[in-house]
Length: 173
Ligand code: SF4
Picture 1 (tube, protein in one colour):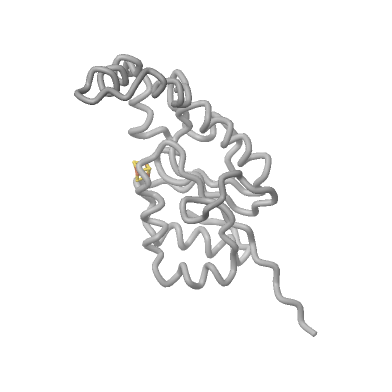
Picture 2: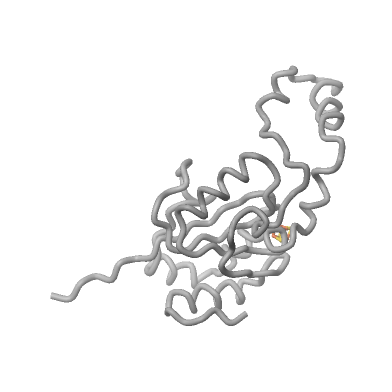
């Protein structure tokens, strides 16, 4: 009796980005249907799992590493994934996300939350994860295996990369 081939475990992660890279992923349209026949999507905005799982084969990471929560998640991704893909310009270079951590965040949040017409209390500032001094491209936080640039990467490029990986061919971008 022939064995059913094991599905690859795919994760997608949204760090400091606008979600545009994930929108481009969703634009794979019918390829998504082919994809779910070959992979299990085990983590990401489309999956209701809070903890990053173990034994992930491929992980696409959108966005820069901007705060302590992102950094912790990035390290967990690296420990639990065979192949990490820096997905989009924010992950590859920092891109627009890298401009934001240098603004006086405390003043900004105080103005928004405490001095607005409907202040929501000092505790609101405490629950936000602390920002890093500057937003980091992913490879400055963890080792990256493949870079998939673009803002966002075109669906055709995402498809080319994933198809090559699923066929066990080198990714030629
Ligand atoms: Fe958004 Fe572009 Fe950054 Fe992707 S690379 S998260 S589309 S700004």
